[in-house]
Image (cartoon, rainbow, N blue to C red; front, side, top):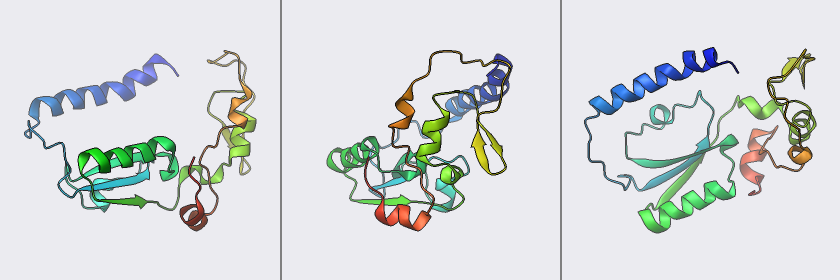
Length: 165
């Protein structure tokens, strides 16, 4: 990834954060969520949880994880919020059209050891494209083959039978 790409994408975020900091009107926020609620949800960028769940600032703790997967860290957060920060309810929110629903653990394990650049979709199949060179020439690892990536192909099944990782 080039520095120009970072400048174009990151600089506006830094500027917006600076403006937000200078104009933020709720200087003292209560640490405890007013609804006493924690939500585990997907981290997809199209998810606008505050809008579709009608949440305002400091009404709930939000834990975002790939696919809304109940990883050890996500569960740790939910338990901590309940035990130490007085939440009494939690919810898991899933959605359709998840970007990773077309990629399975086996495919990730196959592609990552060869190339850390963005894959291409060719005739419905994710592949590492042929490259003249790569920006990430460091040695690879087969560890990707043993990681549980929280992928799924069936939304209903993933919600009702998901095992914790």
